[in-house]
Structure formats: structure tokens, C-alpha cells
Image (cartoon, rainbow, N blue to C red):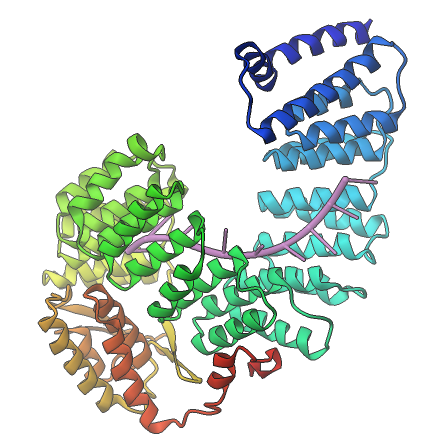
Length: 606
DNA sequence: ATAGGGTTAG
């Protein structure tokens, strides 16, 4: 009985199917569909008829036949039909369960796959390596660590820790859940490793900002002569270079890409575009991008964000226009980049216009992230009231609002708008987010308008609440050396030179028309073994001169950022390089020749 | 029936 009614349901489902209607419509109008769609439709008809035949005959077919049908539907992206077949099965086996789970992941519904896994564990069917790999993948997509750990436990329980595919999927899962150390533990315990396992681990490091570790692992892979890196691995390696901001490694990685013949791969090229932008080599970023024949939305977005970082807001806007003309659809990230670009190039009116046309012209509804960019844009040029109004008008979930209110806070601090700074800080403190930033910035805002009583009071409250401000740290790579500096570290070897450099840069910035936001009072913290001191100074540059911040890299980065805003990044880089180069001899200049010839071997990496 | 890569606001 069930079968008969199901046949009826199927028929109506068939008739309701969008593709079925398409077929009927095209037949009726005598119009041909696109070849691919037609093929798909025919395939779907075939699947439907197999399905209907099986049901009408009333003889329950073999489970294997049903599984084939499930997979056919999954391939055709008809997950609900796959599910119907599955639900009709009197005795689904492990393949039926796994196929359906994989189908739900492919359909973008990984939570459903995990739900099915739970149901399966309640049945008599036991999972095998395919099921657990699929379940781990669902956790990876969802970044669901809790469930991921349970899957890991099941892998152990079913004795599958020696399976390379299962373990690679666990490495990937832990990586995507931001548990790189756990990923590494699984990776190290693997006896059999293949290129996928290595790539998963390298990608896990690269994606969590541990570029050096990623590169080291890549070096190991090459050193052990485990094979040639493929485009998957190289994309991750290039990504590792961007996340460590290392231009030297990046160029060598580019050499490796050329050497192994993966220049034409879209994903690798996108990673290179991003890497050159992040490592401060914009002309190469552009070069690599322009070499791509049909850049997709991702490289376009990388380019837009890259141009924005160099103060080339008009170029970003031009790129948006160009991609739309070429039929590449911008996405939410693209618009984040565009708004970021407008913000950093002072293109406020363009930015507001973009915000308005995003949904109308491009079908992208702005979310909190986009509004945060606009708040930043308005706040940056001092239109605090409008920024505040906008921030208040947005409905945000508490866990989403920290960036929004943090942005507003830093803008109001910059412009000495204590009342807005207070409200923004209170929002952050109330929602227990970014506490140290909230306290410090509000305290700085009070200090800026000369209200020392409140400034000190906040510091006291902060201490009382047990909130600790982590020491700032940054680094710069010049030629072959990385210089790391941390705030409060007084061991700056070339303080005087840096101070005169900063003065020089300041002069150049003024010529370029950049009005530094911080000309008034700033707060400088000196935290050395619990010691804390509040100092009011004329500017951060002076703070540096007094030795209170001795962070050339920290300061140079800041200056570079400022210079980028007025389009003088190269100048800054040149001057800084000159200073540092005098003392440090650049090692192994020939590497660059290797790179130029495209014959750089990966073992030259270090 | 199973595993890996690129863009994300302050």
C-alpha cells in the first residue's frame, strides 16, 4: 500500500519538478534547452522512470539498486528525491546511509548529514570508513568541534585510525574547527600519509595564520622527497606566505608554482594575487591578476581589497565596474572590499551610493559587516553623528555587534567624541566583548579631552575587573630578515634613526595631504611585570622619542598604513628598507635570479 | 558511498 501511494506521490513530485516543467515547456514551444540542461533533464527523466518502474512493479528491488538510484538523484542535485528512495527502503545498508549523508553535504545541508548519522547510530547498521569520513566532513563544513570530537572517538572505536582517508578528513576537520594542534596530533600519528594528508595539514596551518609552520611542513614534504607538490598544495603554500606576510617566501613559492607548471590554475593564481597584495608588492599583484584570462569573483575581490590597501580606491571602484561588465557577479565579500576601499580613500559619497545600490543593482543585502564598514567610513572623516545614528539603527545579535561598536568607539576616540565613545564602550562592556579595547579606548577618549579623572578611573575599573591589555606586537620583513617588535620593549637598537625617519615621513605625509588623526593627546601604556603607567604625550611619535614605545616595526607599519592611505606606500617601503639595509647584509641575493628564471627549487626555501 | 586549495570590515 505504502508503495502505491508513494508511486502517486512520485508522480505528483515529478509533475511539480521545476525541471520537468522546463522539459514540458520546451517541448510545447518547440524550443531547445541548453545542451547541458537538456541532458540533465533527460537524466532526471531516466531516474524518475527507473524509480517509478521499481515502485509500480511492487517488487522491492535490491538495496544495491536503490543505492544506485539514491546516488543518481544526488548527482542530479535532487536530494529530496534521494531521500524518498531512502525512506522507502525496508533495509538501508551502510552505503544507503552514507550516500544520503554525502548528498546532504553536497546540497549544502551538512547539519542534516549529522542528523542522519545520529539516526544511523540508533539503527543496527554500523558505520564504516566511508561513513565516518563523510561525518567528519560535515563537522568540518559546520566547524562543529564537539561533534567532530565524537566522530574522532568513533574512528578510534571502530579501529580506523590507520585509514589514510579517514585520518586526513580528521586533520581537515580539526583545522577547520581552529584546533590546529589537535590536527597536528592526528597528522603525526598517521603511519600512511599521502599528498592529501600533507595538504590538509599545511592548509590548516595556513588558514589559522601559522604561515611559518605551514612553510616548514612544506619544506619537510620536499625534503623527504615524497613527490611533487600539486596545485592544491601550492595554493596553500602561497596562502601561508600571505598569512606570514613574507614576500621572500612568497616569491619563492611563486617560483615553485612556475616550476611545477601550475601558473594557469585559477585558485593558485588567486592566491598569488592575494599574496602579492598582502606582502606589499602591488605591481606584481596587478601583473599576476592581469595575466589571468577570465578572473572569477575571488581574484577580482582580492584585487579590489589589494588596491584599497594601497589607497587606490578609484581603482577598486573601476574593478567593480569592470567585473560587472564582464558578467562576473560580485558577492558579499566583494562589497566588503569595495566599502573598505571607499572608507580608506575618503570616497564617502561613492560608498554611500554603493550601499544603496548593493541590493537593488546587485542583489546583495548588506549585513552587519557592510554597515560596520560604512560606520568606519563615516567615523573616519568625522561624521560621527551619522555613524552613530547608523550603528543604532542596525539590529545586531550581541555576538555580532562587537566589531560595529568597536569601530564606532575607535572613531569617536579619534575625534574626541566622549559621549559616543562612552555609549559604545558600555555596549562592549555589557556584552562582555573586547573588554580591554573598550576600557583603554574610552579611557583614552577621556584623556584626549583632558578629563584625567575619568581616564584614571577607567584604568582603575579595568584593573579591578581583572581585564588585561595584551601587549601589541608586530613584525616587518625587509629583504631576507624579519624584524619583530613588541610594545613596551625598550631594546630598540636604532631609536634615534627611527625617530628622524618618522619625522621625515610625517613631513612627506603632510605634503601628500594626509592629516594625521592623532595630533592631540594619546595614551601610552607601559606594562612591565604588572607595572602600569599612564602618560600623556603630544603624539605617538613623541612617545617613541621618549622611549615609551620602542617599536620601529609597530610604528613603521602604522606609518606605512597612513602612507598607503595617501598612496605613498612605495616611498615608505623604500625609506625603511634603506635604513635597515645599511646594517644588515642581504643574504643569498641569487635566489631572486633563480626565481626570475622560473627554476627555483623548493628546497631553496630557507 | 569517503579526504585537500584562493577573497572577508576595526
